[in-house]
Image 1 (cartoon, rainbow, N blue to C red):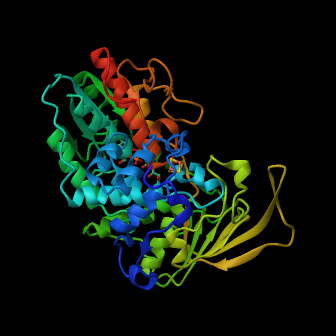
Image 2 (cartoon, helix red, strand yellow):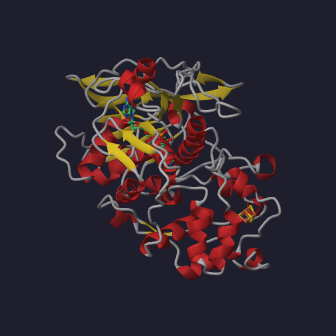
Image 3 (cartoon, rainbow, N blue to C red):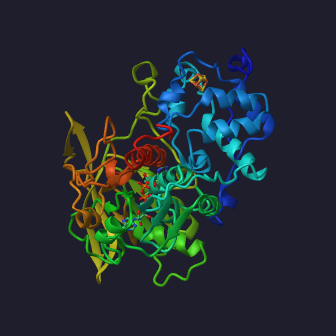
Length: 475
Ligand SMILES: Cc1cc2nc3c(=O)[nH]c(=O)nc-3n(C[C@H](O)[C@H](O)[C@H](O)COP(=O)(O)OP(=O)(O)OC[C@H]3O[C@@H](n4cnc5c(N)ncnc54)[C@H](O)[C@@H]3O)c2cc1C
Ligand code: SF4
């Protein structure tokens, strides 16, 4: 524990953000990591709890009190080693994780939690700045070949762990660039893509081969992979979006969120994107109140939309959680993202009844207010309204993985259409097929980057044990 009285002396400090009027002019990151002195002070707030709830709240069980202490003592070199011991990609989570560790922090019971994510961000940025992130090359090669299908955080974490265990790993990605939703979902203003590129350089040196434009189940056959590799990891994400079956859904201007976000990331990467959906000068409606919807808001603001309105079907959550009731669990409470701060009208308990068009193009949205009683939704009589809409983005979540790749391997699915594999006990992450494993959103359904990293790491251990009889990779 750095400073015994730190939690009483110092307030939680948020990372500085560039002003809204500057940051909406481009797609660059705008969150500035803590200075050394600030990070030291924030590290001093950690109480080094006997039972560190932060560590159990974190899906990858980051050893948070230890690196808080190391940062307090300005021992950044050891801090990154401790951080990397549980997390392959802290530069991703240090930027975009919602930080369930902070919700679980003991200090959160009667104070503001330790700024764990901001300290993580500072550690990993310093490590890259000082060239401390180098390839960990295993000189003892096993001769085993593993194919990883999908290059999101789950596939990348599995691939890196397996390469470090001495296996020859090939990552097959159907898109033209590596990274999954980190690359083609999450906008650059939340996470610039150079972070993925430099990890790829590290991983290539460690023995990972990346192949793009490889659509397994389409232009690459499942049988070929089963024949040529000793094991296959399916980490294809959960890409199938939830639709909105209302009159007018077919109108021009009504799109799934990803049809807006993915081409925008390609444009930012320097690609020419024909027929890119542009929000410039338009009335934008975003349906769905989660991360994807918030990213549509941030991107629309950068396009220069005329108005942006975000509707959510569920009621408005409370401003603050009832801490004694919910701590150390993830609380339901009002969350205002940096994209919301940049400007958007938000409304809750709204159902969409119809999308109204003119000459085949959407012109307005007809909605109504609802109330929730005993978990059931009821429309409030007389609450109907109409609002202008030139673009409507459907951001209501993702229901399942694309089934084709699972069917190509003959993998059994659970009742939600995800690859069926447990996470406990012997044979976990293994599907019904002899050497086929599954991890990340493809196994657990739509989730978070940190969960994908956890599943990739744990799955790698199971693959290693399956191939070698036992594994020294961490659980
Ligand atoms: C817009 C958006 C914003 C988000 N923001 C956040 C956030 O701020 N914080 C957070 O923690 N989480 C966020 N998430 C969720 C997070 O991105 C996902 O939970 C995470 O990326 C899942 O990782 P994954 O590796 O399982 O799958 P993915 O990242 O989806 O990667 C799967 C990859 O597999 C590839 N693939 C699929 N099928 C095949 C095939 N047949 N052959 C070859 N390749 C294939 C896909 O092209 C894709 O590249 C967001 C999600 C979205 C959509
Ligand atoms: S729960 Fe909070 S105060 Fe306790 S060890 Fe973790 S970060 Fe430090």
